Image 1: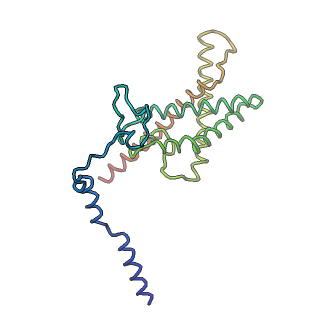
Image 2: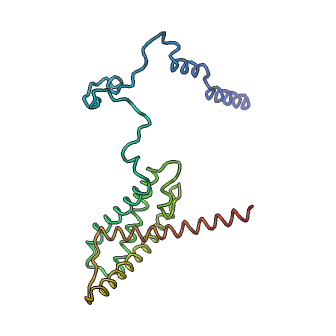
Image 3: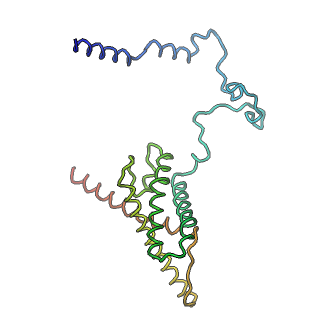
Length: 231
């Protein structure tokens, strides 16, 4: 009896997923206009399709705008690297604006740790998911993430926090180096380049992309060596 029920379920499933060839033939015939008996072609005018006579659906030349399923929007025409750089710079500057300005009473070490932790949290929760949302099958945003994994891993949350703490430490060294350069050029002892969102975002972007570039180079060299050994 169990074998009979099993055969029945398998037969039902097979029938359920059978390809309806006759339905496909009907669809092809309809698209070829074989069964419309001289009926008018389907209009692609936006006003005709929506049933709304909106002046926005008419071009300056008086022609009806057409539906274009392959039309690229404004953001789609911007190169991926420009969007990635802007997103990383903007979020780093925003973290500096909302976090750094409220930590004046803390010492430098605590500030760096907290800034790095917040940057790592923002990268794991906001920036990287945004990159995954905007990417295509080419995975073009992998080059702008330290941990470009296609799945949501629990350990990447802590890895991003530790990584961006290191990034903030490098940024502080950049500030110190620029300060020493300003003192050397101006001859003004005690000069200091203040931390503000625009430059902080820029320096964070530079340090972040430098570390990601080193990581990508190491990965490329390892893959090249493995491929050479397997040949």
